[in-house]
Length: 634
Image (tube, rainbow, N blue to C red; front, side):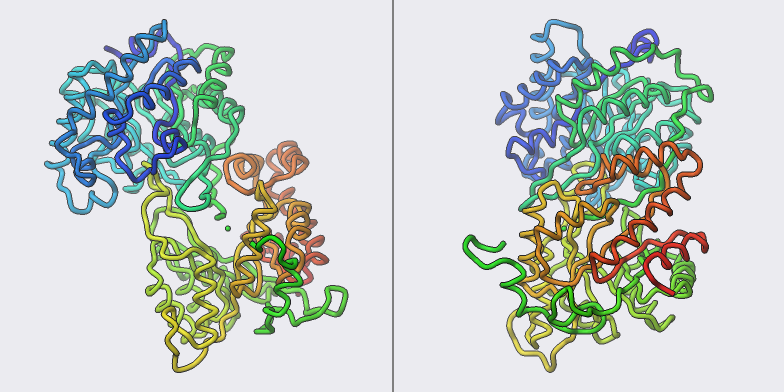
């Protein structure tokens, strides 16, 4: 079947959305073998297919993502590979047969191995696992093979080669990180070049990125291939809830609006990946029903939205029992005076310590340390009081925050703060690193739970959480009292200042306030907000908190309307005022300057509401000086 035969004459094929995260919402952990539900609970899988069919999609994908023998063997299910795959096709086929209209059944094929397995499994074994699953899908009667979430180009080429043996149409989708490259470091151009001439009817991208990031990748793919383009974005970034559960907050209308932009940019297959639901896809179907017909693939002539890549890093995310005293009353005895960030015990109306101005210095990718030291020196030259090194973002190798903080402190003789996350670290490793940081002079630590980098599949599953941020606060408090994590006495006491993150944009400020108060009760001495774009959001959280500890408000200037829209819709616990969005949209090419003015105004307001501000300074010296001056720096 050719591309036009699969897609229709100049039409757009709407695929379904997430299977795994909908199963997760139904109570199944993402780290189990979800394809096995084709055998143990086919009725649940059928209900999900039925929901997508009711939404109006034209392609449903089998619940066979991750159903290769190599992946299933980790769950003791390797011998059931063919049975699980065949059952997955049968459930989807039955749902389509009963829906009363013509709908394609796509056989979902993931990489044969997980990212962790890739390190120890060779190409021959990967191909054998793919061949078993793909031929089982073909024998069971799928209409098209959908190769999804391939982060490594060699694996995608292997899978296309195996899929080509069946004679079925093949849709091949790579997954890209926020820097616009696959996890293996390949660009969209590299992917197009590698797939050129191979038996695929459509080439595309899915997973990892939300609607805006996928749009940017589609624009790049369109510039380098004449193949039809497939696009299945995530519903923004996931929110980690209590325990090991994850949820997505992106609304259906936002996804639908970007579906139209994807079609305008050249996409011929549009659907959803992690976090998207039947409600999202119903909105997409409605939006595309009124969209102008596509005129064909056309490499250079495809529509452009003008949004382009935003180069975004994603900001990260952060009880008193009934009848207890308020946070301010109950915790006042726990406040300390331990250096310049932690205020002494006194009323806000009384004379308080000088307002502190800190610069945020993001950890660099490996090999770029000298550039970061130069930027940090420029920030010091603008008159900031200290530097804060947050957690790095993305799948690339980066310098650790504590290591960079030690280096900056020694190179520049400046006070530093460093974030420490508990993700993928045992508590003993955390303790060793913290004692090392203290010995090297880094005393101000911001405790965060953290999240794994987004690397396709179900990206927030992997890793170890011996403790969360509250547990890390308790560890540091114990070290300050001369006790290790087992309660054994140390040779001396540490003198850490302990900070934690709070999210003023949280959708439930009362819950966020209780979490913050619990951390202060555990020993946290100051709070650092997630980036704030609207002072009212911080004031509302402050009112819920009382005054349990000094606060540093984080401000990051907005660079464009696209960035602001991304933050407002795709990043959990982030509020961007409607007025700011409108101003940046009107500003057009002048948006960077408008963003600096907005940030300067916000910083000026913060002076009366917090003990300090943390600023991500722009590269332009004049703009950086404007923001530091707004904060009262020299």
